[in-house]
Image 1 (cartoon, rainbow, N blue to C red):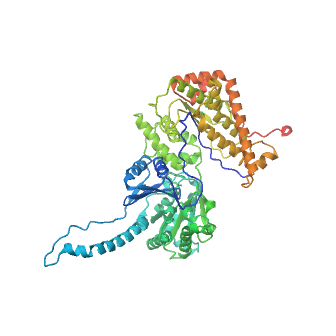
Image 2: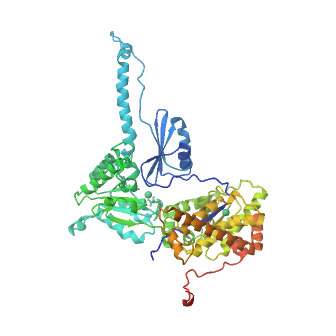
Image 3: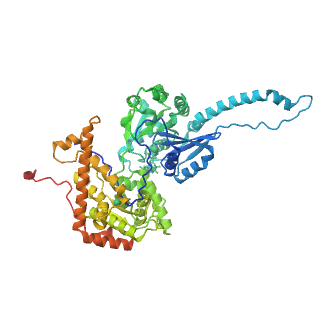
Length: 611
Ligand code: ADP
Ligand code: ZN
Ligand code: MG
């Protein structure tokens, strides 16, 4: 059995949202070419922080807003007059935004009469238009160069990285691999004498936020060599030939500064599989240039250049890129385990005062599925929570709140709900919480509220207690029932349903579809279920079957939730009443209310006769 890594994330059931369709970007398609998007969308993305960097290129009254995210490059048409909007959105989403303006100077100065029969005014009248024309040609040529090339100039100046391996925590498994690269750079002699050839290219691959960029910086920092960094998307440009030119100049600069580290973030933007499509010609030319550089630099072994690159999608890289002699070393940087999370938290809590009651181990336990970047953000948010509460140290409760805020948005206590709506929300949330609490394999319910938060009017948050890499069918079906329990409670108590369950329904159908399709869990132990599960893009009837099986799973889950709530109606009533009174209940209060959770053996072998 191949262990399947299922990123078990915090299950957050957001109820009674105002039914806002989240502005999700087109996350499909992996081509790194320029994707045009509407301006409104671009601004939304910026404001939501869904871009790594952005650039506003203005040319006279026209402007283009470029968004770079995860190796992709989006562009929206706009006007200079709307620059302020882009700046505001970028600030709201804390996305670094730079403004580029081709320098066109039209200031010719006032006409001066220099005397001696020579009239400057007349001269200008005669020659002016022609000069102006010539100047315009020159200026626009320069402008084009600036737009295309100017943004890259700073990449050719290396930085001295001050990051060390101490800043990268929880990487015991790969520490030796990266330390060796730093060592060869620092001290190539012994390796050279033994004929050990320095790896030219090393690919760091893994999910976003796991510290790949940080590791690359640390390699340069530990080795004490210049660090050149660029992002794959910077080589994929609209202007023909520019990408390969940038590659060439980057490598030329690195060779001159050697020993050095060149880091190409999100290399899939250039290094994706070649398709031979004419539309991708520019990108492929860039990739070819990269391959040429990699093959070409058999430089002085005492002055090595190591190219580090990162990607979230190793399998999508062009095979030519990972062939030997190029990026032939691959280092997997995975999501941190509990121990690793603890170490990462320690790094980010180094200069933050921690209350004696808070302990990084507990925080590590409640952050299954979070990457290093998420943990860094969590520590920062927890510090803010402490500051907001006027406390002098960060305690566990601040972490809890921070986690909630990061996953559901800030609480909006000022949002006033009618009593009727509050009652409805209370039953809806208690429905989730009660079914979650009573289902042995659901994650522990950590908090339930009727406090408006983000786009929702109340939330139920459940956190896993341990790292899991497999989910069982039982866990999936119980989770489905918990997701639908909000709606089930509404119908049970009010005989009516609301738009608030929209988000629940969407998540539940997503889970049900993957159970029926990908995971082949629809009807366990049957050949049919497997056959439905084996995906085949071309067979419509199979798509229908997956859909039908998913519907069946959803129906069963909804029935199960309704049955459970009916059976425990008193608990539901009591829970909703207490929740209305206190606004928020945490895990301990939930246990006090409902009693201890039923325990379970997750994967107990069946007795021989029942098998
Ligand atoms: P990636 O390149 O894999 O997307 P980054 O290196 O950009 O991730 O990580 C972003 C930030 O997250 C880092 O600057 C650091 O603050 C934090 N971080 C990520 N992984 C770790 C780690 N292993 N140890 C400490 N901090 C980390
Ligand atoms: Zn809900
Ligand atoms: Mg990165």
